[in-house]
Length: 114
Length: 111
Image 1 (cartoon, chains in turn brown, cyan):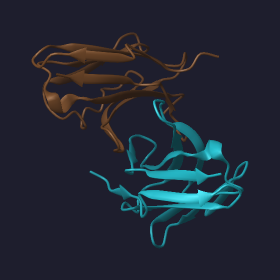
Image 2 (image 1 turned 120 degrees about the vertical axis):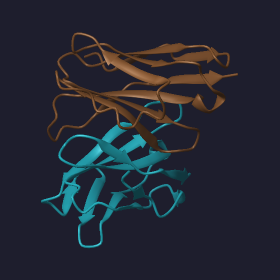
Image 3 (image 1 turned 90 degrees about the horizontal axis):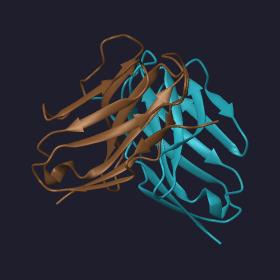
């Protein structure tokens, strides 16, 4: 079956521009996560959606970052006024429920801010 | 935030040998742990998980050990193969919500 997909796979933008990153989770998965991974580093939690509950935004690094999940499926991570330090791989993961299920990751979007 | 760290950033092993990758976690309330494998240019891939009410779990060629007394987690890979070369992350989870990841260990398998 289809896994988690993300688009675009690569995004190069200029400092100060806004970007939108898309995540299509596995169908039927109620939980969705966004992470950021800098080169050679671990995964930094950004935001977590679970069903219809209010998202956990505690990992968003600044108010330039926002995310939404429409209809409990597709999610978009938006970064406004991008900075060079925003350059990283942004990973999305989905999970069947909030229980002891593993996350399934997408391939990520590599963002480069010039 | 939570702290999940790895003892060895890079591990080199000979093909056929067993590998052991270690991880320390800081929150004694963590109740679910996962090991992930990440190959270059790809997202992390699930390897094996373990709940806090267990101290050992085995999969195909992999074993995860959990020592809650010292808050330590390890991943053992038997008969390591070149295809096992990757970065390995441990992750901890509290109340089945957010996951906290360590910085990763790079495993190099020498032929």
